[in-house]
Length: 333
Image 1 (cartoon, rainbow, N blue to C red):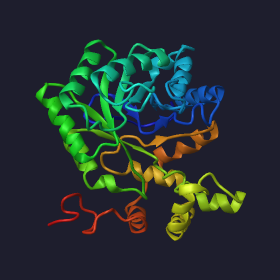
Image 2: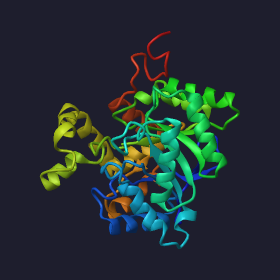
Image 3: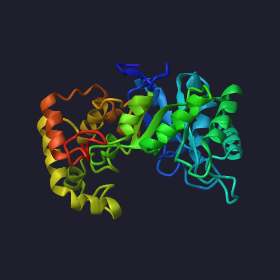
Image 4: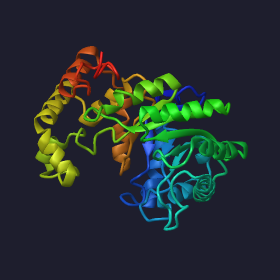
């Protein structure tokens, strides 16, 4: 397992690798054979934490990515036993009204469908992909408690929650004597630091591990300008990414120069910065090839000193008019 580091997922006793293998590209961008090879390679490197969702693959109701993972598990060789598999529900899996969100009915059906596609009898971490403002927490936690009693799910997490949603969920679970949430998956990177205002403090208070998604902001922190110079184009040079690049070109250029000064790949510096943030469990990396996976591993061992962290804060300031304080000090006294 080389030198992969592990940490507990939030306040739980579950040990996960400091990098999480994201599988969103499996199917749409990466073939099944290559996806299987990437997962095998992840195990060789000691990555045991894989993240997916029932909607990944983006063909409604088919669960393309979960099926790819399930067929990989079915090959045996300890693949399932070595993996902490996290999946999500909320997104629409059909055209009928109860095939989406977090009703007790959809929770039951979605879980059983994911188990079937993943070819496993339990999910390690079952995450709400988004907050459901129309379903009461008592209903959600009752449905989740049934899944846990049945042995179908061990831990529960959230994704894209605000700080007060985390507080609501945690307090509702507390009244039921239930473990509640152990993780929150949020967009978090040098360019998008809004979670530092309230989500990170809430997660820390309630003992949730934070799992950042889009840790390189859609590739903009992955050496996009260098790649443009070398190749004439890049993955992040069209659409919204192109607009963001033009808006922040000077900052990204300064960031890439800092990384060159350090002799490190910009992608690894961006991932390493996240690993230096209090409360972060594991950024989600989404390799489309085995080479990209191999290159990402440097981030887990890269140590950034106080001077480098300060220079990164200057380039990408925390979202606080009053300095880098959490809410409410960020905008009040």
